[in-house]
Length: 251
Image (cartoon, rainbow, N blue to C red; front, side, top):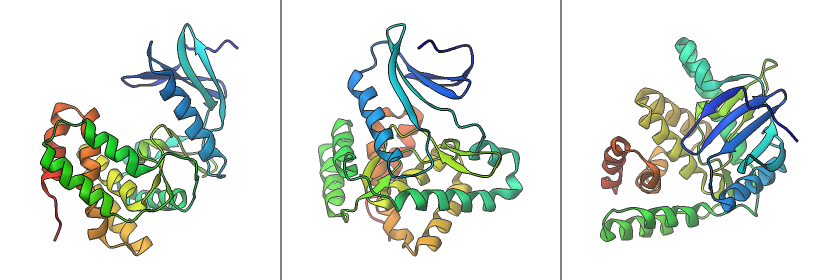
C-alpha cells in the first residue's frame, strides 16, 4: 500500500512520524535493526489485546527500503500541550495523568519482556564503575517481582485526549512487565530531565496518595532507573542522572 509522507508530525533520532488520513506511519532510519521493529510491533499488539485505549497496529511494512510501523491515528491533543497552554489546570491534568497510568499498571500481559531483565542489560551497557553496577544490581534483585504492564516512557506527550474526552496512550516501544514503582520512578525522572521539578514532585505525591504507596519505596527505584537511562542520555542528562545514581539510599 502507498502511504502519503507529506505530513510529518514528529521527528526523533531514529524515526519520523507521519499522518496519512486515519493512519500514523512511524518511518525508521535506514538500517534500523529489524529485531527492534518486530519487537515494538509485538509489544504493541500484546498491549492492544489487554483492552487498553491504544492505537491499533495496522501493519509492519517497508517504504523505500526503510522499516515502518503503521497504526491507527488517534486525533486529539497531547496532555503535554494542554499542560503548557493551561498551567492553571496542572493539578487537574496531573490527576488525569496518574489515573491513566494506574489503569495501565492494573493490567498484565504475561508474554512481555521482563523489566528487571531489561534494566540489568541497560546497566551492563553503561560505563559506570563495576562497584556501582554491583550495588545497583544487588538493589535491583532485592526489589519485589511484579507483573504489571510498565509503559517505559510514560510522559504527558504520550497521552492523547480526544475531543470526546477519551484518553489514549501512544508509543509502546519500551513496554515491559514488572514493578509499578519502577515505571513511576521513570516518569518522575522524565519530568525532572525536562526541567519540571515542581510537576515531578506533585506527580509523585498524587500517585503515592492515590495508590497508598510509600514515596520512599518509589524513590528506591530512582538510582536503578537513572542508571538504566544512561546509555541513551545526552552528556547534559548524564551529569544529572549520575547525581541520582550516587544517591544509593534514601532516608
